[in-house]
Length: 438
Ligand code: FNR
Image 1 (cartoon, rainbow, N blue to C red):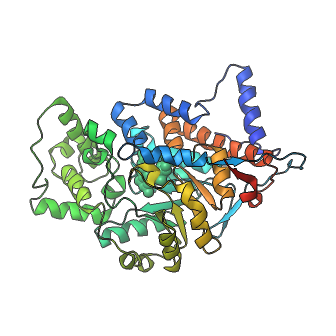
Image 2: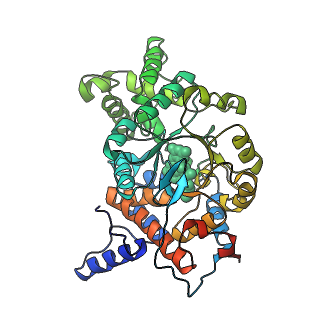
Image 3: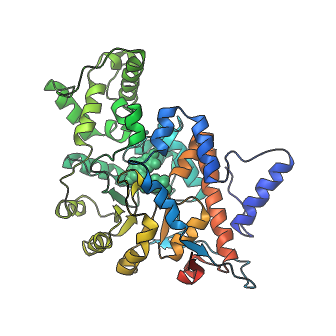
């Protein structure tokens, strides 16, 4: 993943690297279209893993609306403007960033690839794209940070019902050099995920995607307390039938507990210990707090001096209130259509949110961004930056860190070429005048 020589434009550097490699018969590691990527990921993954990554809430109307809403806007190409020199950089949270792309937090990346978050971190670092580390990661944040060197990372927090755990996670994020905390607010209840329900598959119940918890000292204390009080299984949980699948799941939980250091003495000890199972149950207890309010979230200011962004905001009033409450930015997101079916698509609410908060706080948009042209539309409508989600998960599934790297690289290249063909030379040039309503 050598850095591209982008002296004559990022898009051109990517295109010539790809076409030159093609002469000697080498093809890119991942398809360039979203449909191609999704299909390649589907072929690469177990049905449960693909369902978790690709699925949305209910009948997946929101997922469809997210991408369809982009179709309401069209880019107007312009000619005979000197666009030979282009600058994709933006100012975000007090720093100049090479591009307006960030990687949205995606949990349970071990479903896509064994290198999971570490692979994503490496790719993000190589391309100088901020990576928002997920609270539901498959690898502890310290491990991902070590793989990223001093590259830009932020931490996404799910505000758990344990204040001590929230404080501990934020302390760890500060210690590994995160530049910001992103609190995701739209998942205080798990959405009605039909594909996962049909398969009876929720990764967390198998010890997947809880590495930030099992590696946390406060969480470990909660787990030990639970075991000491003899409550290592949920009281209302039906007995699990002993089948090969159940045994595999139990082994997976034990392995996760062993890897996280919850149990000493390797896998054999972890299989005999009640701690890994108790960790899963503790996680399910503390994960989210549907009673959360604006008053309580304000406590984040007692926990950190880092910039705080609220993710999952789609109502202009909520965006306004977040900024009034002193938050440092918002992420306009509907969680990729995974929470509310028939939700408003993010790109449709963006103009109103921009009207209310632009200039007071940065606005990052995700949910439905499938390529560089989508990013151009979001930026032209006033987003400060754009978050990439599923596309990079699929890249990870198809070709590990190289796959993530190619997906992100392709998105930036398409953004660059679209910007130029729209007659612009910088992200600041992008405004409503670049677009027309379809
Ligand atoms: C997510 N998303 C998410 N968001 C978050 O704040 N924390 C998380 O752990 C996760 N995990 C996660 C897993 C998977 C598999 C998906 C697809 C999504 C939501 C994510 O950050 C982002 O908002 C969406 O992915 C954007 O939608 P698209 O563009 O991916 O469809």
